[in-house]
Image (tube, rainbow, N blue to C red; front, side, top):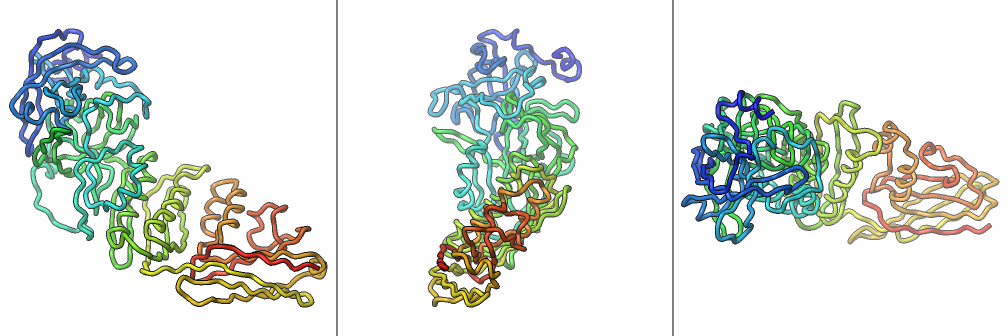
Length: 518
């Protein structure tokens, strides 16, 4: 295979078996703008089996800038040449933070051409040079809320751009070289991988190792280790290098989408120039402000990206205090359209967390994966708390009618009485009756347990009781009556004699019960 690449590439590739200690060469990377800079390389040796079937080459980097900064976050993928041949990509910082000299690990080019065909891997080399992930125009509160999920995906934060609090998709910026449609990658040039674009930008910038026609190899180690993927690659621009004793890094900006990553392997990423990866349009209408995003359509990342951008759109407007959102969610998928609504009230963090839970239940359902085309969230905010707690329920059976009074206490409001009349069959009126009032959680749980397929799952989303629902039940020790509402979802042995869902203006919590003993 190596011989084939020797023929295809204008610069021959060096087999790392030819490498000996003391060999010298050079590497290429961009430290500012798009101008390539060179640095010296001195081979130390080969470190065997750093991972299953993988060796790396140890080298000392030289040059005034590199010696000042140390190995730089974002230079992963920088090509190294020995005796006029391409050896591989700078990929590992073997000295770590505070190292007195820049000792790197080089991924052999042959391993990048023929990577292990794996996705997520337990193999992790702590010396990987970080690919700083930038979160531009993303709320710090949203990043904090989903910190655990972000860290689990190993989206290492680099330069976190300032949140402007206004949509930026309609802004006009001057077109620079890296934003030009005829931009061409070259060995050592910056390259971006985009996860979110539009009114926010999430992505990472590393370095191109090799260009072979419309095929690009970069990074020298994994981005996220996803294996076969379809993620956008972008042009990129390096503003400068931020020097640090702990970890220097490139301050970079991504440009236009220009192709598609199709392999995110242990030994680097591989991409095709000119191919358009699938993307999902996402719109968040938060009051009178609309945010628009394009999300990478990668199943393992998608729920996190959706929740992160929804949370950011909310926190841009309001990130602390009580709030109530009337929310309508519409998901246009190839399988079918899914729409549901609910009301969320409480501390804004709690409200957003509840929304995220509902969204996760859709994308992580047990029945089918969703080929999503677009998502729209419509939120109507009210900057107050609209919650009520159930305080009491009383009942009075007169002939064949049960008169019920449920008392709820709104937040900072007066007690409210909700009255209901329930017709009771003669046979039921002779039994001890238990009356209960609660929020929606118990009923939703029973309905959830009875879902058998995707269609029933969607029906559940569309018809389930909402957080503003007050659920009143009447039951006895002999529950032999089949209720007309929600009967298909509820197990026979758990069905009450009577069940009524009453919509209120508050998010309901708490519960109460009352027994009528005949």
